[in-house]
Amino acid sequence: KLRAGVPRLAPLRGIREAGEERTMKSVLFSRFFILLPWVLIVIIMLDVDTRRPAPPLTPRPYFSPYALGRGGARPPLRRGGPGRGSEKRNESRPQPQPQPQPPLPTIYAITPTYSRPVQKELTRLANTFRQVAQLHWILVEDAAARSELVSRFLARAGLPCTHLHVPTPRRYKRPGLPRATEQRNAGLAWLRQRHQHQRAQPGVLFFADDDNTYSLELFQEMRTTRKVSVWPVGLVGGRRYERPLVENGKVVGWYTGWRADRPFAIDMAGFAVSLQVILSNPKAVFKRRGSQPGMQESDFLKQITTVEELEPKANNCTKVLVWHTRTEKVNLANEPKYHLDTVKIEV
Ligand SMILES: *[C@@H]1O[C@H](CO)[C@@H](O)[C@H](O)[C@H]1NC(C)=O
Ligand SMILES: *[C@@H]1O[C@H](CO)[C@@H](O)[C@H](O)[C@H]1NC(C)=O
Image (cartoon, rainbow, N blue to C red; front, side, top):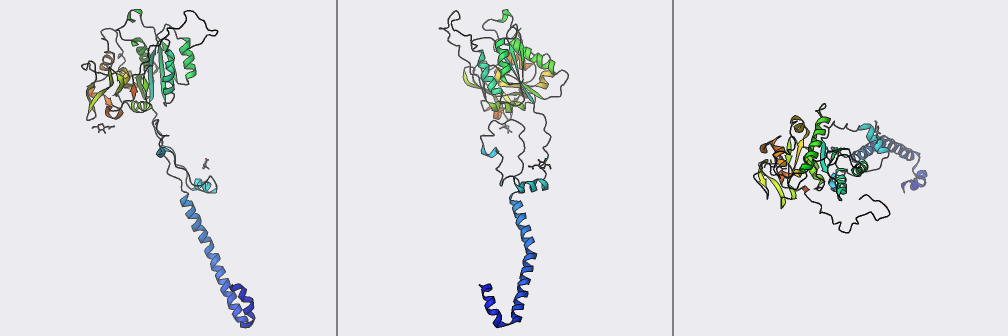
């Protein structure tokens, strides 16, 4: 509007007025150009500030099975794409170096197994173990040689594993006698031999029978075992669960339906032992001689620890993270005596 009026008014008011107007204009323009860079700088700084990257997540040292399920554990979405802004940010803010982490203790799972129609329930165990970081599976067959079935199975399992075998002497293959003694001891012997020269590596050992069901949380719990840790076991001893009784963070007794007078009234699935303890007690094994039925766990644990020393896991032994889910004996009543099918199939 003002501009449109200028040419019309200029001839009437004279040259002086027009000159004043020009100087005012040029003063305005120069101020504008002086301010412009500052305004731009302020805008850029504000922009950079709002695009500041979120603080880096501290890496989780142990595997958390539920981290992905919880929204809170996901890295926050970044504002703005990877454009000019992120290049600037990279120059001005170098990424913090990740802290050196102590090595994750290896979990060694010793699993005795024997040939039977349902032996490939090992599949269930492999599927669980495959989701656990830094786990080494020690599978020990009750056999005079490694079977083809188990060898093939392990080759395809995609797990760090060791395949051992030792036959149970015929005289011990009677009902009422403890099972898998020789196999568990073979696993212990392998561990001791493997680590006799390199004792520094942290590790935890537990006995993973092939018919149990394991929550992934259990592995997080046992991984921090310093000497011997314990936790409840579900569906065992004729009860819904058995558990160590804990007071002030210490084990003081046992909730069990069967022979509560055992020194360690606990199932094979209810404890883990640190590798250090296994190595510093080289003679601790599962005993045949003098061992009564159901005393395997007590006889073993007696050799390496005391009840006072036990470390309760699973929220002071109030959470069931492993279940003694036994596989039902399979019905093969209609299985033909001689092979009838046109192909031979491994089951
Ligand atoms: C950030 O800069 C470093 C080197 O200074 C480079 O290795 C890295 O790839 C850059 N990151 C991005 C996202 O540009
Ligand atoms: C277990 O109990 C002790 C003593 O009451 C307590 O200090 C500790 O925080 C408890 N642990 C857990 C995981 O709840």
